[in-house]
Length: 439
Image (cartoon, rainbow, N blue to C red; front, side):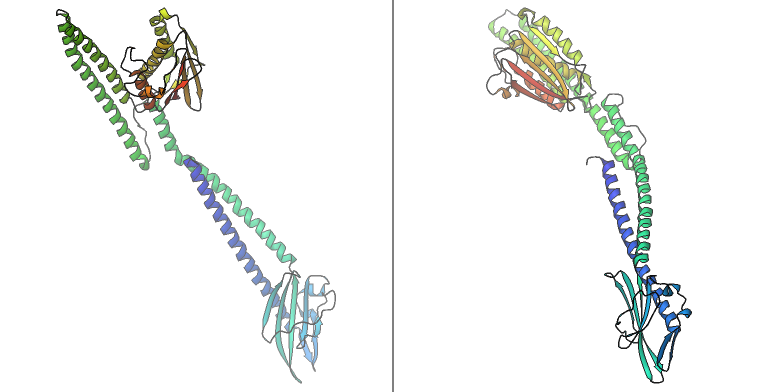
């Protein structure tokens, strides 16, 4: 998960879900406890009402149900049943709501309240023991009240539905608000990314937007880095210019002095070495220029450099009658300095034309944010350990002109641009495969 927005949204969703679940279960448990206590209190009130309606005369037990303010006790199958048992558990009275006569009841101790939830019978049960003083002495009785759980369970189910509805709907609204907040918070980062893209494309040279305080350090660091890169680039260019002027003038003087002489073997050797020194200086300057390229290079199209270089190769190698073919769709963009791109293509096509017998093919393909360039010739192919040709000072044929810096220079350019180079044996001839970041 490489997106900051997705990470924040995922964490917020987890926190919100955990809060909703914890709150929901806590409220559900609190409501259930409160509902059970209310159920017990209602049944205790009914017990007190029953005790007020009891009349015991000459040890004869009687209960006036009309004095009990609970009409369900007189309605059969109402779900509420009340009974009174003596000390031995024998039934002495039961309400008219009982469908069938009750059996013996477990006696409760005087003053003892015994509230139970009979899950197997889906009923609530409350028992209370009391002592009645009669002429013959104290009599022990137990009042038992039981009620069906169905209405209670329905109320609980309805509460749970309403509870989760009222929790999930606000949670969804909060998540929507979180999305809006994230979009608002991420706007400065998106604007910063857009400015960096403009710098990459060459439309701007610094980050000038107004950003929140938390991004001031990053903005300052980027501008400092870009400024240092521009200064370093300028220093490199000045140093290279100074080096070129400093070396070319003494070499030109040496060459003129030699040419003005009698043309001895020593003078010819000096002239030859001075020309080689000029060639080496030129190539080393190019290599130094590669190292001083911009951190952020704007994209460059491949078609123009390729077609211009092919026109030059046709003129230079006109005597060989080479067939130069280019296969490319559109104008793929690569992130390489324009001068470096010309140097790269020129070196590779020059090598291919030198060794080719009759054909040089250039194929361009683009996939997965990379541009692949294949340059193939029908020459003798690469020698053993071809990868060593990418090292400095090594070349396939020491009789050819040059110092073996061509492929090494190409390798440095490609590596500095974030690409790769590979020397491939492809049937008859040789093939160089390049990959460069697409623009």
